Length: 108
Length: 176
Image (cartoon, rainbow over the protein chains, first blue to last red):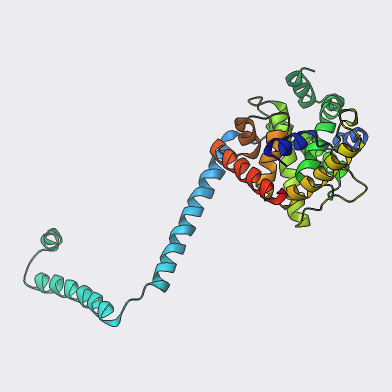
């Protein structure tokens, strides 16, 4: 079958029986009140909230994934702890040496 | 039928005018359900559901697109939901001959061959990915443009083009 045959056959395809759903549809419709649409702002607000929530979930997910998959060795971790410790130690020493808090913060 | 006027009348409370929409579109909706969902789904039931959902969705219709596009979008959503629920696409049984081929154009032998081909095509159509099938069916349905299909399927025109290309390629492969 050629491509054109396929398209032609698809065009000719019909549901073989006659469908008449008028009565059942009208019966159902008469019992259903039409709902007034929500204002556009509500829709927009809902979309923004969903987008923010999705971004947060994605960010947390990616971070958790990195945390669990990244292979930190012990030296790296010790160095990181040491860096933090040194930073605070210097800060304390300088404070003891008489620098004002504002000055020290400016230095850093 | 002036569709805008009919819809405004319905929204104003004249429910009886909904009959006009049902009468106008019920055969088209049934055909679309049949082409996208296959003969395994209950076509009259689906058609009925489409019109009930359309009625409920009428207040959301903003007259920016054609009513037919809005109806097709609801039809596609209803049928796809049903396919998902059934988790399968049922191929037609022997007693349902899918396409109607104008018999006067062919002799008896040609008619048999064409019916057999149509049956194979319908089965192959059922093996396509639902999105590819929907795009291809809409493409051959009322000669929709890529833009119309994109509007119905709520995706980009580029995606529609890709879906139709893949659907045609896969169908050709299956039928060769």
